[in-house]
Image (tube, rainbow, N blue to C red; front, side):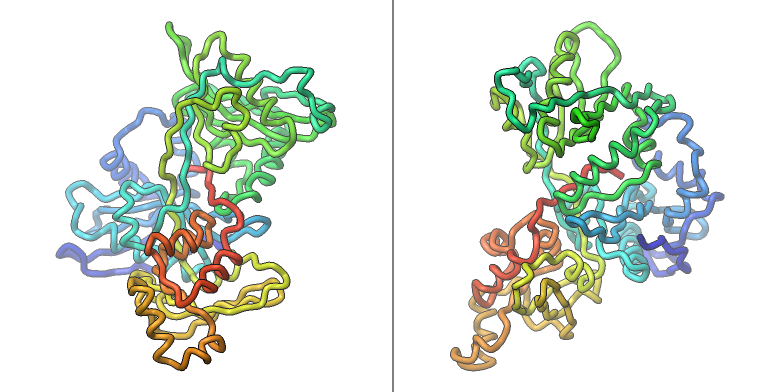
Length: 461
């Protein structure tokens, strides 16, 4: 994973003053805290022992915009690696993007994010993800929606209970589930010895089924997953009869109060036969006190197939955004062509923010690998009609010679990141007018090389 740099300052004219972007130091921690409160308010949910925990370590990942010594905007970088199948790509999560209320609408945040993209490129990051306050703002900067989530509200009384006569050979060995961690709000997490490596083993198997899931370490597990915020948090691990972990659930229980209460699941992950049923039966057993199960899952999750009555409340919600930081190495690393594939095409990509991505690119696939080479200035306008693109091809030679030249697709960088992440197929984006192709083979080729797994990201930052 690339290490976040400690770059020199970047100065630019913004809003009538001199804008200076630099890393924060421990001495800036109080100003950063005030900026965050002024921007997002005080939720009252942050445990007190977090307030000054690892300040020196975390503050070096924060970038601030200063004007005459005043911190007027900032954000935090979360260095990470994200799974694309078995591969892990260097990526940077961006969070806590904030501008002081009296300095908003002056271009500071926009300029700061452009500076950050240069920094990320220079230090080897290929992708960047974030959770937007407004999709239109980040689309102007080249980020695009990369995942959906389905919010389920299912009565606990309607969750399945396994019946002995429904046992199948793969479940005959049975399994068991037990609590391995719990934490009260504002307290320290209590975790069973060796539980985190077992949870990590399950998580990694699950992450490899998707594009975009981040790698975790034990500190992330403890601080962001096992530790409680507003309500008590519990973690249960499912293992088969041989003791092999195959699933887990992290959930919160509200304080006891008159009337029915709900169980809110933070994560539900199952990768072994029988694990999903075991977890749902475990949750079902709490129906005497609690009413509904609330859980957010990707559209690809099999949760509805386990419900005896699938007529439960569900709501489709937008999720995180993703951006290509360095186009060529990202496309090479994310490609998954078949070993026998051998073809090439031209990508004409528009990226008005990151000029190093803007242009024509030759994508070649051979011997199970992809190679991306810059061809210089972009020659096909991404928003042109398909007849215009085909007309450019016809102008370069006769119809009989067209088969000697690679097919061409024109699109912007936002459409491209949706394709490589697995969020959208090239064929779907073509129907939506988000890309144009010189011939159908170009679209078929792109869909054969990218997006073999769904895009997904559980973690929040």
